[in-house]
Length: 299
Length: 250
Image (cartoon, rainbow over all chains, first blue to last red; front, side, top):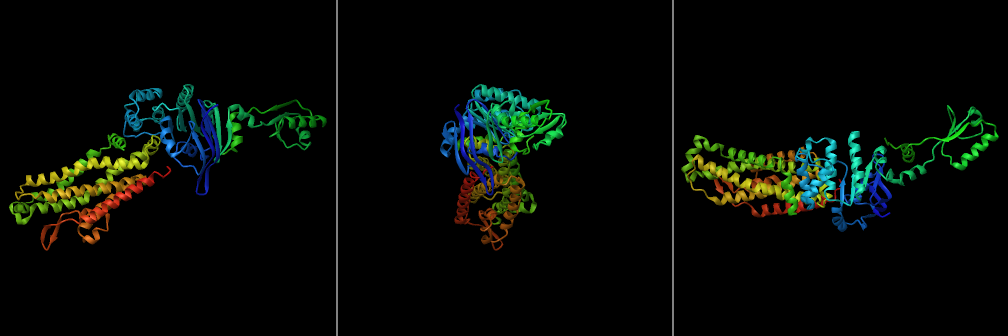
């Protein structure tokens, strides 16, 4: 897979606080890359560094096959659409007038502006003042501004923040559709649910460090679900010196792999403990995520 | 840069920049010529020794010193605040326009609005003087000089307020400094030149081509060296400060 964004050892330090710590990021081409992490984990700072809005303390960034430097940034910017932190938009102007500003800034054609507005379904509302837009409309206008330049790469920082479920679904469908058209989308969120349904590749950040990067299935493999041993005599089972907790159906053990499971079952069987069933706890992606991030404030 | 300036004019739409400027121009012209309609003043309109045009210019200088700092602060603040509220700094940066470029474009755009405004303001004051009945011939030199210098000092304060409004998000600070400047502008008209040249807003007094000799008004040559020095200093500070803005990580 060709990477559209690659970072190596990317670090950003603010006085005594390290916001991003030795980050190695690989965003594959044509995918929706879900960039997850609790609030304050360094997602926005990373995105700002990729866009050249913030200077890294150390490390390298490569975007669309070119090392990001002051000189290359000017060349790269027309190919990168972005929305960082809050959606942009001058409140005293209409959506259309805001788009005209973007058009002038980037020397775009009127059909490009019309197409971007149509893509986010804002054509009908384009003549309304942005200050009268709902949050969802502002987010869509922000995405339209990012899309107008026909980017090869779209970087969106929490684009579904504050949206209702219908708005979230709308943005999700839009981003999946864009990825289908070959645009690489890097989208951040602190809400796992939102990302899970649109991202094909996930990157999880915790306290500035990348703790996981890969597909959804690979993420599941990272975490071993708890083991439930169903027995009518949990006292006898616990008397074998196992590190386990009592549950209504028997005992529950954490962090044991397949080999350890076999040994535990053998030990209990030899001790004459009745075993009715041994199973893994059904695990949601959120459980895996919480497990990885140490329950660091994720919703 | 030309494109950035054109963008600033686009952003001016519905900001009431032209309306605010027009209101203040009319206010300055009106207040400057208010005393012309007093019966005692009108007696001097045909007497060259009474210098009615110089009298009018003294009032004009006072009103301009009082209102110009506020106008500069309000225009700069409105034009810059939209970048904070609309996440415009980031939007522009992702299109290759740094905050420094935006600030310099704002200065050029607002100066373009201010130039005709200052000219119209002076013409209005003269027009009202003629309408009120001043029949002594007008010496245009001091009026042209004062109008030109007033515009340049206004541009200097626009630069200061654009920078301030960009750095401090709370626009009350920029407008508050403008109000303080209005007070200092008037205060320095009443102090010596030595004091006025040390206070930035004192340059509204320094550019006045009218002074008092005994109990008589006289036309003076403003201290061009000091005025040029002030304008150059502001230009350098603005250039350096806006370049530094590019390094602020928002």
